[in-house]
Amino acid sequence: VSLFLQLLVNGIVNGVMYALMAVAFGLVYRSTGVFHLAQAAIYLVAAYAMQFLIAQGSWALAPAFVVAVAIGASCSLLVELLVYLPITKRSNSGNVCMIASLGIYVVMKNLLAILVGTETKLIDARQLVGAKIGVVKLGGAQLGGLITGIIVLALVALAFKKFRTMRLIWALGDRPELLAVLGYSRRRLHLIVALLSGVLVSIAACVYALDIGVSPPMGMGYFLIAVVGVVVGGVSRWEGWVAGAVLLGVVHGVAGWALSLKWMESATFIVLIVALMFRPQGLVSRRLRAEEMET
Amino acid sequence: MNYALHLGVLVAIYALLAFSLNLLVGLGGLLALCGAAFYGLGAYFYALASLQLGWSFPAACAGAILGPSLVAGLVAFPMLKFRGDRFVLATMALQAIVYAVLKNWSGLTRGPLGISGIPRPGLFGAEVRSPMAYFALVGLVALVVGGFLVRLYGTRLGLCLRALRDDERAAVAMGVDAALFYRVAFVLAAAVSGLCGALYASYITFIDPNSFTLNESILQVSIVLIGGGGRSSGPFWGACLVVLLPQALSFVGLPDVVAANLREMTFGFVLVTLMFLRPRGLAGEAIPR
Image (cartoon, rainbow over the protein chains, first blue to last red):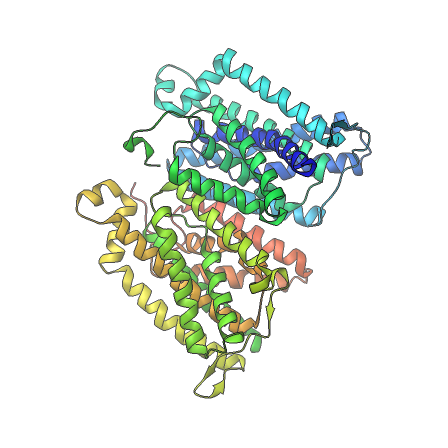
């Protein structure tokens, strides 16, 4: 029982991290229509930046975290400015942007592998204090990640409720041409989305790097979990992205307990296939008409 | 000379993979990221059939074609209900699950250790061992099967796939059975990928799951996209570029590890550049302005 509880709590903590990445992906996907595969590379950039600043630069945790998030967010902005916006101007095919995004991911992942190597780089996070509740133990990095994740998700919820820009971003995914008619700059909104997405994915990357380190394959692994979280939860509501991601975290925990840790990754995709087949509109969503379910 | 023949074998295998994937990606417009799954299944079917069951080369190849075709036929029903990003995701899911099975079902596949000592092809009582003989065999298979696939591009199947890619709703309204044509393309692509897997396994004589990852699927799709989806010659030029371009790096004297990363970086860079300049690939169809 104690092992089950421990894995369940680990799953929930992971789920909160996945939720940050899911919101980062969902924002770009829902509002600009780009299947933002380069997000996996931005994850790596932020995580490696943090690891480098702490291990090589002997920076303290807090400033390294802030600078790494800023570097990741800048990367996201650059990708939007230099690749997505020019390509969207020339071609309105989502596939073209997705393939370009795939290219960016491949370039950046391999560049990082050349620069820092392919082995897992760990960050010394012993200064973070953990906690023990009953039979369940949380490491310092886990507890820090959980608290950071919950605070950031609460801020996202607040932003969606209070800020007009967030409503405009949502509208960008529904009727972009109408926004232009009403005098809003779509380019500006695209850049805000890229910035927000970059910040969220970089926070998740830094928190995760503190807990388990960073290696090149991690970016795509966590990106895919985030995408599956968005699809399983339902693309049409951001609450669904969070619910889907947390559910995946819990499924990972339970799969690790019931089967074996080596089948955890497969569990993600089995959940995806089941969701696509039986609830394509997602967990937190209204029922779609047949013509709305085409893509 | 042997090195040139080795490159020739790789070009032939990758060109054949690209010709088959071109049915789905180029003609059908469905970005399938599960090519390496069927390629890997073919390689494992061949290795297990020839090592554990003692099947001959033709029989093991037939198994390597039938096995992935059967899997593709089964998964095609749920997967081909999706289009666009969801299809991409579903194919990634299939790729991840097949990789996990190859890696974790140690009792059958020997897991990460891989399978070694895979028999080389034996034809008419003689073993195909020399690079020249192997190049001739793979070249012949690539010519026959590749030629068959190129012929298919111009048949009703190819034309209907193009129509579905350009406007599925209009094509269906004109009487094109989208489910049937996509399913046939999917199973055919899997069958040829399986055959390529068998050729690869019998050539290298060692396979492990790391040869059949998502990265390999991305590489195969890159070949089609770089060469130009939809065109008959596109996959061949894509395969030549992807296999031969990295060889230029070996003349610079870089360590192997860096060279592998640089090779992938080159593909990534070419992909991004192509999306700016020629979104339909080097030999791709022109986009009407």
